[in-house]
Image (cartoon, rainbow, N blue to C red; front, side, top):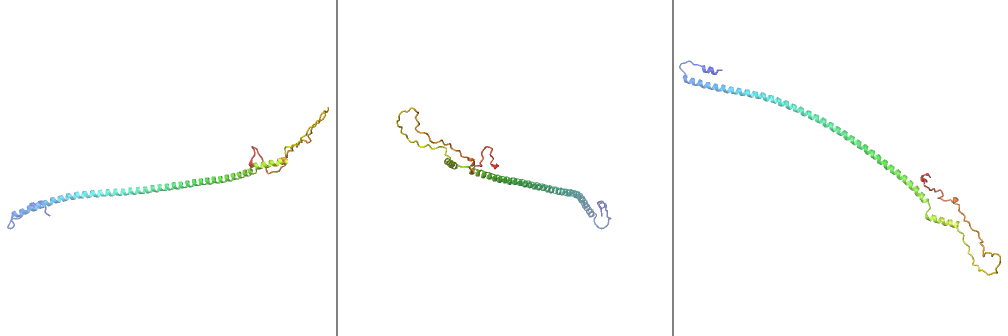
Amino acid sequence: MLTIDEIKDISFRKGRGYRGEDVDAFIDEVILTFEQMRKEKSDLIRKMDILATRVEQYRADEETVRNALLSAQRVADQCVKEANAKAAAILSDAEAKANKMIKDANGVTATQKDAYLKLKGDSVALRSELEALYNKHLKTINELPTDAVLIRKQEELDRQYPTQAEEPEVEEVVAVEEPVQTQTAAPAYEDTFEPVTPSVPDYTTDESKFSNLKFGDNYDVDAD
């Protein structure tokens, strides 16, 4: 391949043939063309170097970006993994706490229900005791005499055991004048009846359904 210097230094033998001026003009044009081509080649080489440098830089940047993406992906995966683990732990802890709360609530409910049922049972027992005591007192009250019974008993006792004697009727005596005598005059009449001492009935032998009744501050109804 010819260089610019070889083209410049070329010489032709003189003889009959082409004109020397035309040959020199052509050689000058060829030299200009080669110089232009060399200049363009230099520019292309420089641009290729720039492009190659940029490509290398792009490759380095691409590698950096790839590494950054991979690192970001690893970080994201780790974050997701840790988040899932934390979420699972929180969910498990929440479920455990919820189960414990439910268990405690069930225990409290069962305790309160048992206490309520016991209270109801005590109320039923107290009701039964009060009803029994009330019936017992009511029976005792019903066995006590009423005003009508007292009046009837008093009338019966007055008939059987009168406490006052009937006074006999005294006939009116007309006085007759007699001679005065020295002895003491006899009384107009003498009482011919003896005073009646009323007898007191023996109530200890009178059997009655109230003979066993007891009264007093220390009387205990449940003692019988």
